[in-house]
Image (tube, rainbow, N blue to C red; front, side):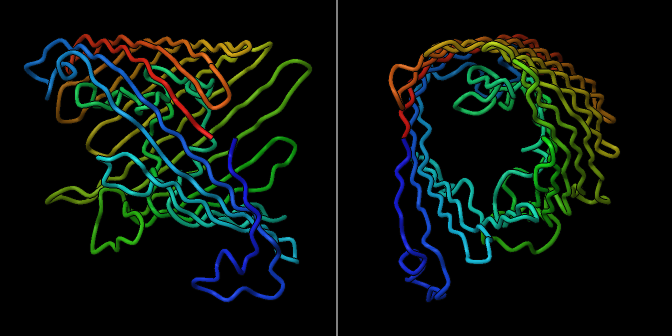
Amino acid sequence: MKKVLLASSALVAGAAFSAPAMAADGELVWSAFTQFHVSSTGVDGDSTVSGGDTNNGIDFNTNSEIALTYTATADNGLTYGLHIQLEADQSNTNDVDENHIFLEGDFGKVLLGDQDSAGDALMVSGSSVGFQFGMYGNYTGSILGGDYTSGANTAADFADAGDDTKITYFTPNFNGFKAGISYAPDADEGNSASTGNTSRDNHIDGGINYSGNFNDFSIDAGLVGGTHETQQAGADDQTYYAVGGGLMVGYAGFSAAVGLMHEDQEDSYDQNTVDLGLSYGTGPWSFAVGAAWSERDNDNASDTEFTAYSAGLGYQVAPGLKTWVGGTVGDYEDAAEDFTNIQAGVAVSF
């Protein structure tokens, strides 16, 4: 359960600002989680892979965050506040994950700062079923992003600007439909100031999403796109663009989803990705399976193809206490070849 505190605007902001007389009382919510993971990874073709198998065949690691959200409503009906996620692992040098201001009213919602983009929020793919194991949304991040699987993606893994500092706008919800758009001038985050071209300049992404219920069925669908300029050493910048979407249907504890994504970077590569996900939950138990396929056509190198299959089982031991086990197998042509990952873990959150 999240820790909720009621505080006046004057108390919250008193250290830096004087509170306006018309400011309403606000709500301050704290939350946190710590996760402990055990994993083992096996990779064929170790001579071409940095590090090869997981350390000594087994690895332990943690993932921990502390988050706070402050929300208040002005007399004119404007809802405003801030959200900050603090990284809490010992070896993490990036102390803040996300940090943004939000403004919300009849006009919709505006986010200012470091947070996921509109395209990421509106996308529907195989990972949308709530897959918490293996390659989809596992607690250590997608294993498809490792050195041994460079280029392998799920449909949700397009270049969406991540947590680059940006402005995002979402429309109000109209009968289940919502649209949004994000703009980030460069790939910098936080208080960094760009002194020239970065790896991702003038990024724009967005899309439209639908969510609704019909009798006992739930339906979610999304269509997204994005573009930016990518700096190239000693050459003109290249234009990147992506377009994709997906559909998810839920019924009687089951959720099934499919996602597709096409990416193209000028004079470099184009890639097509398809992913699938199926999950089922009953009581404290949850089960999920997934698959992903990517094919990359490289302009100046050999083409690559990636296929992966994953499955996992989770159990809610008590409120705020969960454990899981999962595994992924894959075949990465012209990369790590065969790949196997097994992981298990325990998470505590409030």
